[in-house]
Length: 177
Picture 1: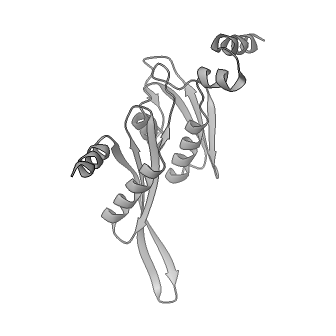
Picture 2: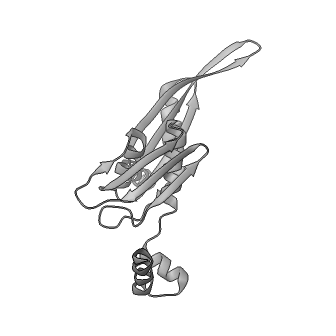
Picture 3: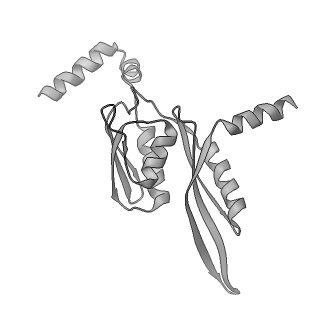
């Protein structure tokens, strides 16, 4: 009983949003087999977000499958003052997404797919640009790849065995030149 309650509470902490429902078909010797591919984003608006894909003959089971897949593929996004710590380009197949930090009050400047992922991750201010393919599934995966690359100043300092001030100071000098 206790495990079920914990599981239910765990299920409720994530918001889900359907990005795309697409009818796909496979031609076989016996004719065309129709099914539906659903792309879903789950997030807690506190730095955790995931994208999933479900493919079945009916839409409701495909959505459930996509939600399970998205929860299996959750990532943690470092958020600093409501935005991302630095500029990054995410790539997946032919889709590219440029993610840039923005000043407070800017909002989420993004298309439907990238904007949904950023909002569910908890990012309040960001500038984005989708380049290349605009296929929602590839764009979503490119956005996730970009968000995976993000590092805070503390993480970079720890990896380089330096203090945060040294890392930020080096960064400031590089921008001046």
